[in-house]
Image (cartoon, rainbow, N blue to C red; front, side):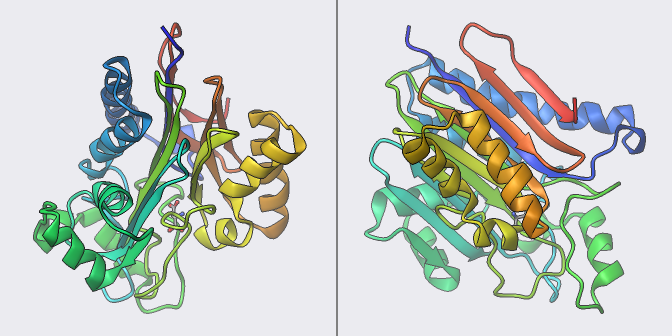
Length: 308
Ligand code: ASP
């Protein structure tokens, strides 16, 4: 059988072992492992990398532990605005949705935009209208409410501060997945609630093709997490692809260059998961930790949180 592989992240940030209870750690690992198993099983059943990426991200969107879908962070007006994107490495087709509310699974809407519309990116009410037409599942505001994230917002709501959902004692984080399917095709997807207390209308890197998400069979598939503004400014995901395609760098070296050199120099914190056409996986982050899980055919599954 051809190689298959999948890697996920659930956010990067100041994640220190001493600050996380064993019960919390186990809870995160359980959802990550389940999301990984769902995506990997899809690949084993000869489903496409796009399908596997969507299925894995849905599992994380449905868990309030992660800042995507249910449990998304709050804007400066106490609302939710979610972003998601997905990309297929074979065709360079892509779909993205931003400024969403009440959509249960933003990543599925991103996929529908990719597959059923003439566009790459839809925002706000137009995106919601399309979602209704496509019969996407909607949920009431209370479904997305999470007490912990509400308290996070209450603490800073009267300031101009924004906060990554990524620091000590905070629930974490943005979700993403990359996969290689049995046909040799790559895909990447990312889904997030953004950053706490962001101005309404703020769009981060997650729905921006080339910044938070990118996939190209010639190079790699990448999903990022961290301070979105820095990932946008460094066009992070596409930069990794370019370093591989035009400079012949390995996946690992290219990820290292962008995360630990370029991004750090700008002052950006975060990480990513990446995969190449040979099924090599990279997990790179310049923060204390990143929730992550991966599995390659013939190897055991790995779930990890902290720096090794
Ligand atoms: N990158 C996301 C954003 O800026 C946040 C995150 O990864 O937690 O919206």
